[in-house]
Structure formats: structure tokens, C-alpha cells
Image (cartoon, rainbow, N blue to C red; front, side, top):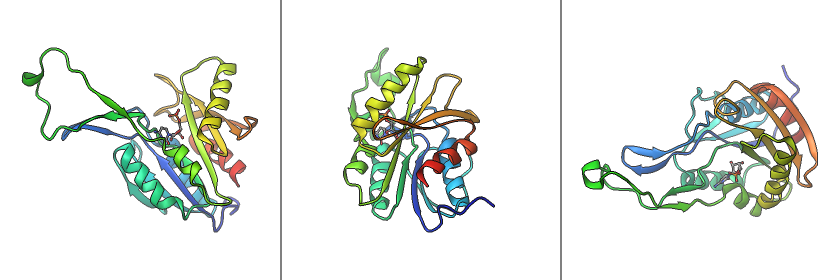
Length: 220
Ligand code: C5P
């Protein structure tokens, strides 16, 4: 049994990819599987935490022994996180949130007969959920964000991470590289973790559950 170093702590985690509806049968999505966020929820549970998971689309089984809220779009995720945030000692935003959503959701199915050969979509920016949570943080709350980047150069990846943690205002940022064959939907992960000053406080590579435990070591 792992050390119960999160016993009595309330940990709120978001996971999975948001789906932004276009019409009743279609959405804009991303390739996040939710694996890393679910692994974090399971690892925190096993270390004694009381875990709430807000799940956007998952390609893995829901974890047991956690309180689960299912959401679809970024706006739904934002609302669920805001409702649960006040109670949390730790918030981890592992969800892949759409930066933009369709400006209007059609009542009926978009039909090609009505559209023609090209279809333009107007998108509007979603709220930055992580930045909002950091802005409204309660005293002592620890807030962790993720940065999934396609940047291959290690120095530039680090620079992106440092820039991002500054903009988001969170306490820690988990940076990982993603691509067609990396990060999203894979079984392993390679991460580094920055503190609010941009200092590297953790580096880990391995299964998503072992990476989750390395992240929780810092948080604990
Ligand atoms: O800006 P970027 O999407 O790279 O930031 C990633 C981090 O911000 C992740 O922790 C993600 O969950 C969060 N995020 C958010 N709201 C958004 C976009 C991203 O909370 N609209």
C-alpha cells in the first residue's frame, strides 16, 4: 500500500478532451485520451486523498473510488470546476480544453445541400479555466496546470512552459511533448514540472501511473 501522504486532502482533477458542439450530432474535439488525468486521480486516491474527477471525453475506463462529474464542452467543464473548486486543497487541470468553440450551435444538422463546397466556421474563444481558478484561489490551495506542446527543441519547450506558468498564474506546470505519436492516447509519458518561478522541480518518464506519482510527490 502506498504512503498515505495525501490522507484527508481534497483533490480536484479535470481530465479528457472537451467536445465543442457544432450541431446535435457533431463536435470539434481533440485527441486527448484522459489517461494521464485518470492516472492522477487513481494515484491520489491510493495515497489517501478524497478525489473529485471532472471528466470530459475519456477513452479509458472511469476510475472507481472517486467522485465523478461528466462534462462535454469547455463551458460545462468551467462550470463544474468552479462549483467544486472552493472545497479543494489541490486542483489539477489535466483536461485538454478547446481554446475555441463554434460561435453558434445549429438547432438541426448542418446539411451539405444547404452549404455547398466549402463551409466556414466562426469560432469564439473559450474562457481560460485554469487562469480563472488561479485568480479565485482559496488560501493554501495548490493549483497545477498542464502544457502539452509540439515543440521538439528542449530549450524552446522550457521557454514555452515558463511563459505559460506566468500567464496562467498557477503554482506548478507539468510540461509534456505531444504529437501524432506522442503524449496523447499513449501509455507512457515524459514530463517536466516547473514551479511558479519557472524552476524545474521534477522530471519523470515512464507509465502514466508512475508519472502521476512523481507529480503527486511534488504536490504532497
Ligand atoms: O494554453 P494551453 O491550452 O496550452 O494551457 C494548458 C493548460 O490550461 C492545461 O492545464 C489546460 O487544462 C488549461 N486550459 C484551461 N482553459 C482553456 C485552455 C486550457 O484551463 N481554455
